[in-house]
Image (cartoon, rainbow over all chains, first blue to last red; front, side, top):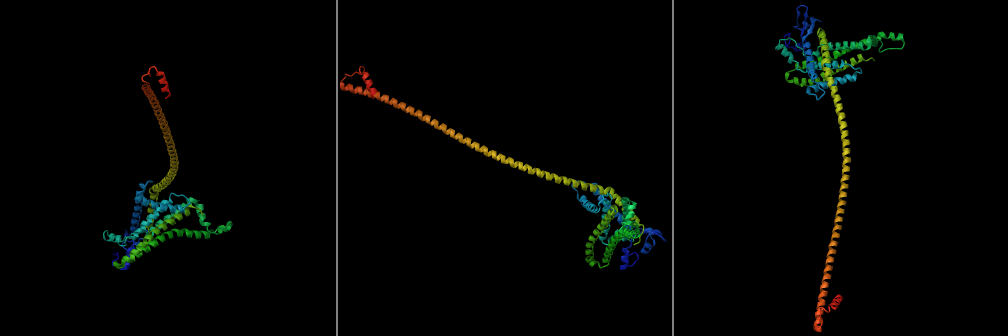
Length: 282
Length: 156
């Protein structure tokens, strides 16, 4: 099954963890990576086609379903789809309102998008590990296919860095550049004495800077780590004889239903909290 | 595990998704949610109000029923009284009528008695005259002695 040839456990695992990469190879030019070495050689100027395809596809699916419900939304008796969509929207809206004291037209949709999109991307983890890659490899001839976008660190960082950018944007817009930098410089150590106050600035900037930068990193790595580990365990279970796989994969999948929902919720909740911190001065 | 353009692609698609969600998905759903909340609140208030009104109406019905019962009782009492009066009145009428009939009958009887007595007296007078004539032998003339006979008759 592996592109490298023999079906050793190592090869199988590596094959499953390799994205489908397209990019500018130093020797082959613009091409599809045929091995993980080629993919690594492409460096930054490459793109994971599978991650992009599945994440955009799932995002479009989310927006299509929710748009369909939104178009038919009535304040009367809701239908099944509207009920379902509304319960999610209300859940997100409640969390936003409970966390943020400032009204915002942006944070609600942002949180909803993150929650549903991340959930759907995580959900791909529950599809048996070989189904989609097998189809792509043997029917369509595509060498690699990693179907869980949230096990791709690019995907999680793509979202978390966007959230980080929004934090800085709203922080500066709500508090002004001075207020934003002031929060970085005069917290947590401060004094009534002007000299001592300014003397604390380097320590404060160091502390606050680290905690600020840690936010997107922890946000991205938490989701990535959980999903990557979960996926890896599914792959390891898939190495067992097929007659006993169910004994492990079923409990793990059931447990994973909790994990994927929880991870989506945590990502959403932390985004809301960060947005609330950006909107309010403390 | 390589960081590459996928990151930028993800960020761009993420922003597009969020903007689309903010423009087309979130507002209609949240509006309909809020509207429904308002409508449910209205409905509950209306239900509250109508149940209050129903209670008022029930109380009103209760008073009306009591009034009607009292009135009915009064009417029944009046009717009873009236019927008693009518019965009494008809009893009185009957009594008077009976007495009148009795009086008439008595008077008639009296009259009959008088008549009978008169007849009897006349018959006794004529019998006495006949008897006297037989005793005296024709010397007694009924015509010539009419005055005496009448006197005798009157004494009987």
